[in-house]
Image 1 (cartoon, rainbow, N blue to C red):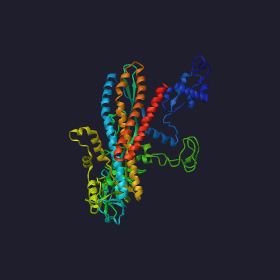
Image 2: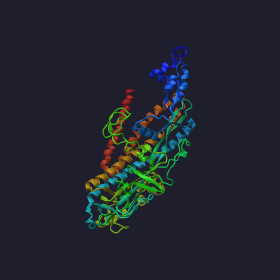
Image 3: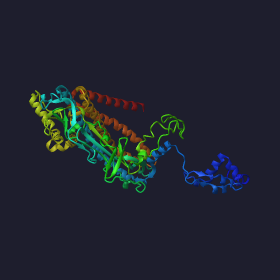
Image 4: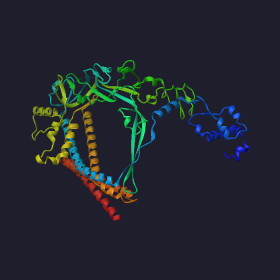
Length: 587
């Protein structure tokens, strides 16, 4: 309708502007350059002076409304603030990087070497894990038959070197204070203290997308970078961002160390005559909010004052009152629907209870803002399941790990057994490794994989009973929790071992897949299809190998379970063979 031969000749501008829907169309078509997210107004005087003018000349009478801002509902303002805080830039993309076919072929040959090293490592991992699990199960069985149930009053009647189940109140004796914020302290009554420091920063997220080229057998990788504003527990160095000039991080409290720090009480009294070692205190994780340690709800660090909000101390505190208040009862919002008493409403875009009055500080944060949270574990009832021993650091009794020892064919007398259990419990990780490693003299290098895995298990997860739980747990429930932890570790390590075996075996086929990519046009498709076939084949092979390793390990430590595992492995092999024969016959 903008053609001069039509409306420009027979219609005046005022005729068109008087119709509301035509006026909107007129403004959108003639003044797109002025519609920059701001409201445009055409005053009545301007509209009146438009009579008898050409339609195009009316553009000069469209003026921006000075200082005019949209009337938005407070909820819309809060939503917009949150959207701005969660802003993510999706158009930040790095230049494409290409890798030639010869480079990929070289990498595939390296992957073969890695796969050949990873396969024996995975088999050794599975074997050592089963050995550890068998020892843990035997240890739990012995512990159930030897455990002595005591309480705080008769603890001295039990000799050192006995596995005990004890329930008592744990009390922190030494004063506790935070290393970064010394003002946060307790004279007693605290077992653990933790502080978390976060800073509102730009965080870079990278996503790689690799595509195979139709010709040449090479690949092209595109890295897309997105940026979002987040409360972060680590310092994100914006100088290493892809878009360094656009996204810059600062910290408004200089010298503030970001991250989480924990501290345990060095002297925890347990009952009348026992003390809990630090390793057992670290197992008590029932953290509670410790903001009440700071009276007045404020924290001062280097003349910077933090104000509390929802358990966090924020700096600067200016945004704590910046969020809009909820509308009064019965007040209609500008969203769809009507509000009804107590700030509750129905319909899209309305207030939901006290959500606006207690809006999260995240919606009002700015880059560089900091927040701190304090948590602690207070005194309380604790259940201990460990080996009782004399405490060398404090007067009285303490606890050591209850571990498996050699008892001989005829067994040991009680005194000798207790002494050996105490000696075994006092060993550190490297001493346990020295006792358990494979050593065949000049052929020790053949067991390097097993020894490396044994060292890791001896230092990080040795088979033992050495547990502390919150609350008053009966003996059966305490052992049940120990068994549950052992079961989770057993299957988790089994899955990890199988995954390592799968990755190592699949890596052996990488050169074949890369060679096929050199075929023009069809090469990438053939390679992708073959990769699925290889993946399924490797899955079956590694599953059978893993089951066989587990079965053979159990044959040494638990013969009956080992036979059951061997039967399952045989069923898997037979089923796989039958399926392959059926497929061959049908083809």
